Figure 1 (cartoon, helix red, strand yellow):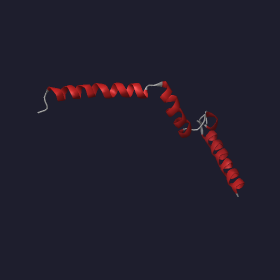
Figure 2 (cartoon, one colour):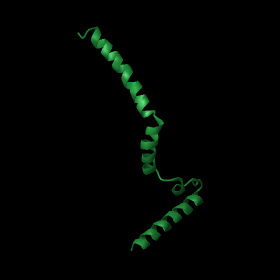
Figure 3 (tube, helix red, strand yellow):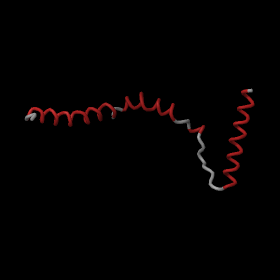
Length: 79
């Protein structure tokens, strides 16, 4: 079949690919320049997220009423 040279090539490839990917993707500068801007586009900021999740039925109704009021205000503002 392939012989020892093929096995040496495959072994070096199996070692080379994970090490290079860890060096490339583990670099803090790459993380700051690539992942953080994408994360900021993908997820809303903390001031736009609801930090306290309603647990009982009355809190859920109040939250739904607040969301509907905001939606109606935005719709009225557009028109």
